[in-house]
Image 1 (cartoon, rainbow, N blue to C red):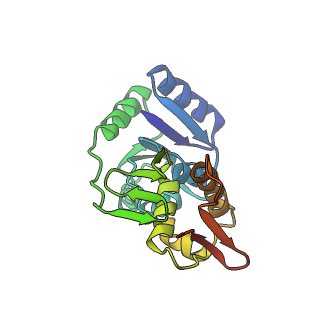
Image 2: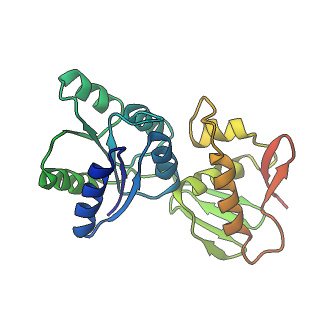
Length: 224
């Protein structure tokens, strides 16, 4: 499994990363909430472990943002607070499981494995085609001029949104709302970073930029 650990305590983070790595998992780490949010939206993880109290963006807010953005990745929340109200708040906020510190590593590993066995939600069946780009929402595949392109989940969602609006300029705010479901500006270059990566993958081997930047306005997919 590919697992993201969002934990600000370096000792705990290293302990979990080492233990899960020894079990054969591929582990990434983040030391604050904002970096955790960026990595979670950028990567294709099978499970996410989130500490309840984080600097920058607390764990509960991080989980709520991921769920609001449509991320169904299973999340295990860690907390030093064992109160029932706190656990209920975390679960209602979108966490799939809750573990109170201190905990036995064997229990955490078992809970993570259980989360990884949960079935993935079925996605909408539809195809989008703009210019020489074809996107299949059901199979989650992308081709440009017959060449298969491998995209990360957020890159795929970003391309799908642009292709749903082929003759419309999509502003940064619109993309934040529709792709990330943010009703505020997180003060990061998250849109620009994902667009840059998406462009590089789409344009490899092609002389024409698939995405047009409309200076001062936003972005649109090239339709012809």
